[in-house]
Length: 406
Image (tube, rainbow, N blue to C red):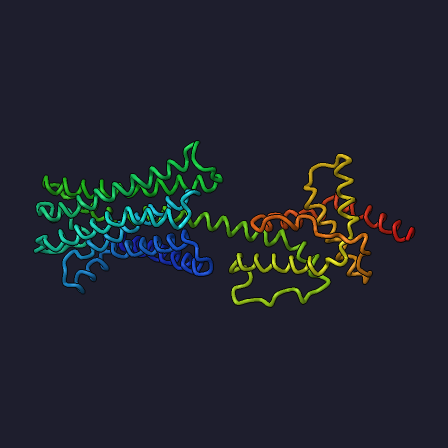
């Protein structure tokens, strides 16, 4: 019964981890960022640990290789690499360590320790006398009287404790008052990540308890078997915090995509050919691509309206702001009023603006590329603002007076 539960839990968790790893790998292929690659690799390793913690898979690996408890060596090695990925992620989170140089230095310093630990475990496994029945997941308690098996586990425990301690300390440094400024979502993610990594020590506690119990004649086999899941659960929980950040980013992208719709309709209505042909991944499936396309189409649409961009709407917004109107962003309101005026003029077939009334550049056009998305969302939200509506009325009045005088 216990093995049936262990098998179902392990296989379910493996499927989840590998599914998330595939999603991260696809995201990393579209956007080759190091954190995405590390997260994808970490999730894949967590899935492998879950598979190896399945009694049937454990036994099948041993049978196929002809080496008893080979799965124990493989799972501990993969577990070490999985925690190592968490170590790298804690380095990448620090703003000053996001360069390739910082990552390479960390790998250069720690790689010899990882390599030495894996080599030592392999040698001790090869030296150990593992005669007798090889029961899945019970290497530690079944061979507690074999010095090489005990040394095998102690070497793993020592390296695991060193990595966990270093990673948790890095996370604490990120959360310290004198540390870098993090968003509330990222702070929560770092806390969850640190707790998940610390959970790896539960594996050490469980295995040690099973070994001590077996040495004293008290069998704690279920504890030893469950210990295999703690490292994988730790990896899955740690990566859940990363995946949650991705979900939050995806949700924000979807919100911005919908918020930009009125602005997109305003600037492309006069020229539907500006709408890009839909791609294979366009739509709700890939919000980042859909959002990028919408931003490109808005920029192109605004550029096509430039001959009709009269300076009167921007001046009207500025006058209203000077008269004490509050609760709006002046630049976003100016851009919204300008685009609405230009789209209406072009839609009614009016001639382009006179040279003396032509606006040189759309307000907010000089915002940095990193802030363009937020700016355009703000412009879209100002399209129906009372100040923008009043500014359009004033602008049309000013234009009519100017035409009469002309």
